[in-house]
Length: 165
Image (cartoon, rainbow, N blue to C red; front, side, top):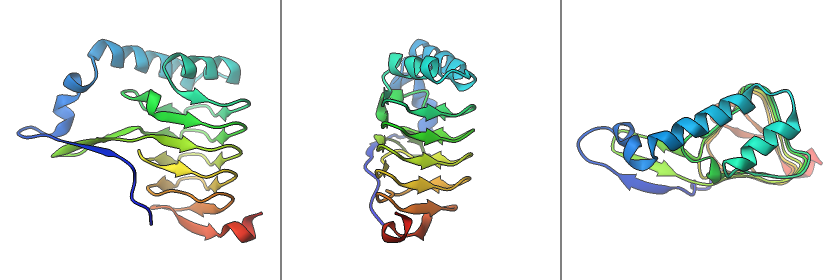
């Protein structure tokens, strides 16, 4: 299993979440939240993708992000969604994570022709390879190879690439 590509930032004293206003300006976070919340419930893929691009998310052609999907409100620019990707209802994609003694930031790259089922969580520092499928209700905590089927909590390989094609 590959190590996630995250930058670790250590804190002392309070837990790392207490430092969020020092990490991202609160006005910026509120703006991102409002844009992402609007996109979350928009039935128009074109409008939704325009909103995502406006806050720094890289979104490919014909990407379809389902209703209820929530992208990272502090670091949306860490997320890249490839061409012809389908992301299912209520999925969460994180570009950061707060822990007690540190916070981490990492790019999430979803390559082209990927399908992500409903209610998934994708952690920072992950690459989901071209043509891969992630089943519903999965916790993606490691890279997913191209053209394979993965699922579960935590995610594990359900069908290798050779069988998935």
